[in-house]
Length: 152
Length: 83
View (spheres, chains in turn blue, red):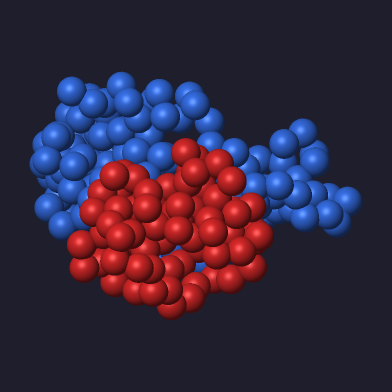
């Protein structure tokens, strides 16, 4: 299994990425596709700007992906994370996991998202509809707690 | 070594990256934060709450007590908010 990790400004096609993992295979019983989108936070946000640490972003996602691959029997794994200015409704992140059985695919996808949120070097800045550039989004304790539950 | 800054750490310092030459008694990532804090008002502001600052050495997360060793790049940033 060779995982795919991409860090890019461009949008992605979630369905095409999922299809690529199962193409000409008959051993996969479960595919989980998770896409994270940009919310408008009740109409307040014009965009999110995602800053990233080039090089480390790819490497850190790679480390998280390797952990997932070691922990669950996966036949396919794709992670795509975007950077730059992203409008409400647009996609930010994609995780696709493929396995023989659904539990591995679901768990690995959840683990990957929990770990990406707390370990991948990305930072979100809010741009408001009134034209002002807002604050950096603060990390949430519940995201740390979500990642912690996979330890041990 | 090269220092790189991200998000509000970068904004407060007003630089994306720079070459730094810390003295020999700066041995750990935490020492480096303390030393940088004394390099000017903007640094003091960026590192006013050192506990929240995350550090990466040569593009891998480390704790504040991690030795610098022969790392060539040290990165400083707030907790991450990707995903």
